[in-house]
Length: 211
Image (cartoon, rainbow, N blue to C red; front, side):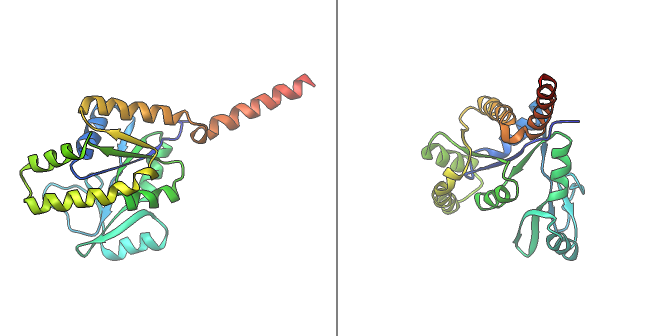
């Protein structure tokens, strides 16, 4: 039986490179699975059910909510978005370390439902570098960049709730660092309950034989 995987919650400022980091983790190592969100919006061209999203209608999504089938969810622009619990639990049971890329508020909700989850906060090495990256995208106005920096200032107030801060300076180094953190976290007693139970039972048998 495979050792249960870890639920890894990755948050960070807009412009910190979370998406790129996650893509590299999935490409470099085979123990990770990316959580697939459920949404009530219509599929865009090229999107596939069960790959980019699980697509459903409003009634189907609300049935999942009523049945406590969502880890977290929110409404945005008239549509529901959320993380189905069944898919995540299935991947974890198969021994996969499931990555959930989500904002701070959602991350704390997930931590309540999955206390053994690992929370990582991704940040550039400095605020100046964050601004440089946001401006360097060339896709947003100065006003939007200012809004993202203001949002980052607010988000920085919640960093202490995370287990680790990951500084994304050189991507390759950051990918290795995250993988080493996950590897170490897997050895934590809180995540090795099955192993602890098994070795305790074996030791009790030895103890009986010694009496």
